[in-house]
Amino acid sequence: MANDATIGYLAILVAALGFGSNYIPVKKCETGNGIAFQFFFCWAVWLVGLGVGVYRGFPSTPPLALLGGVLWSTGNLLSVPAIKLIGLGLSLLIWGISNMCVGWASSTFGILGVEKQQVSKPVLNYAGAATALLALLVYLVVKPTEPTRDASSASSRRAHRRKRMPHRLASPALRSSLLIERDEEGDDEEGVLSGASGGRGLTGYGRDEHGADAFLPSVTGPLRVFLGASAALLAGLFFGASFNPSYHIMDRAAEPDSSFARYQDLQMLDFVFAHFSGIFLASSSFFLLALLLHALAGAYSRRGGKKGPSGFPPTAFRPFELYPAALLPAFLAGLVWAVAMVAWFVANQRLTSLAVTFPIITATPGLVASLWGVVVFGEIRGRRNLGVLAAAFGLTATSCGLIAASR
Image (cartoon, rainbow, N blue to C red; front, side):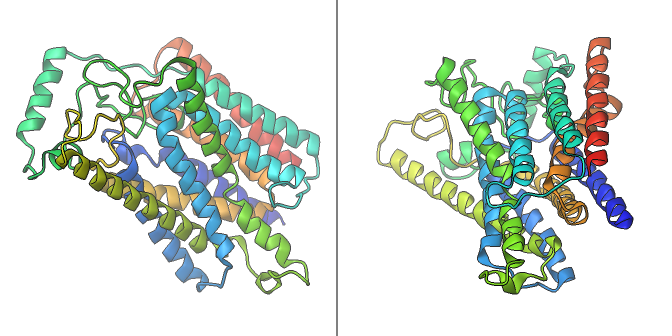
């Protein structure tokens, strides 16, 4: 048991480092609306899953095991409109809280297909989970230092980028919205670090050249906030429930009369390949759907439909955007994320309870991302910021200690 706990907490450390660092490769890359980005990201995820499958000998798992990956990928897709509608910071807060609450409550109360998993000191576990939630709130208060810009130099950089575009595609629609190798006017060249960094995000949301909201500009005020918050909430629910199908199979496999009884020898790592395959299948489906919408939009334009400046109908959401410079970083980000996710599977197996792993792993990546911002990128400066960050670190450490002691 002591060895299991050591391996489990080491796996949590690897997961925290990975989830807090996986977007470093794409920090200065524009990623468009996220559809192409998530496809190449998920390609890397699936390859890591394939390696784990080879290592485990590809044990037989029921099709239900794919559902966990589909849930995660759906949540990942929902994060795109959430970020575009209400911003990265608020989106992260909402789906971080709902993600943690669903994963923790599934185990603590035995809901959403997971049997109740006991901890020896429930009061400490409740206190640790509440402290982890408070830490997430405090991370939101940290405001990164915005880099100063010279307007003339920014304009010259954009002109330079236009000149060095390697080629132009035949179709105006494709030229302006499918293959993109420059940052659009107003984009933040620094990009975003990760969880607590508070940047604009990995999905290119923001404003158009006239200063209007670039995503669903006709939706404003409370309705815009409601739709964005709802998308973030749903994303967190899907993220938080992504382990539930695997746990449901293992719980039912322990029952002799269950249809899952033949899977009783499976361990958590045996579900990694199926889980990651579900991610890849869902991601590929979304990618193909985006290509279909792109083709339909082009056909609409060719038939004389009203066009926007990009050659598409005047809709704020271009269904497909491809930034070649972001593809390799997306792949690298996917590799790091996948390793972190495998470590989470290991932690679940060794520590045996989502009530232990979920609060710690959802709270600690913000700490890691903030350290990157302070030590390496210098994005977080100032006495107030550093004081708030120290408080968040203290809360995160306290929550980890309480949850570890509750086990």
